[in-house]
Image (cartoon, rainbow, N blue to C red; front, top):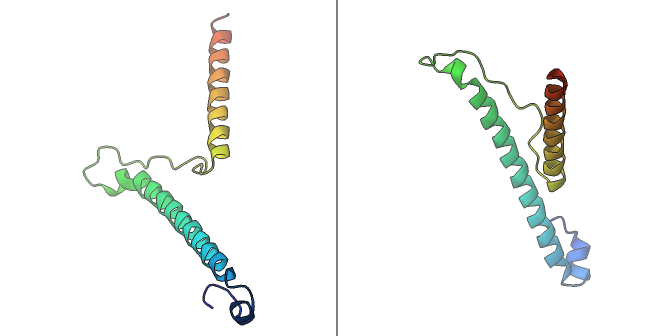
Amino acid sequence: MSLGMSYEDYWFNHYDLIYYYIEAEEIRQRKRNNELWLQGAYIYQAIGSLTPVLNPFSKDHKARPYLKEPIPITQKDIDEREERKVQQMKDYLMSRVKKQGG
């Protein structure tokens, strides 16, 4: 019953139904684990950005900038980020060409 399965489903429906509930629970657990891992990655990044401030032996006591955009987790997000980087590089190179008079 801890899987979210009702009493009626457990006792009166097809016995294979429990396997689907178990699989759904495993998917929920993996999803939750990934969310917590991603949260840890953001916390790690935030603390890493502050290490120069917290380190008394650091020469530069300025915090490093935090992430400008979220960490991409899907292939679509990764592809969009790469396309933006390529477009930014094209824009930069075109501006340099225009400055040189070309």
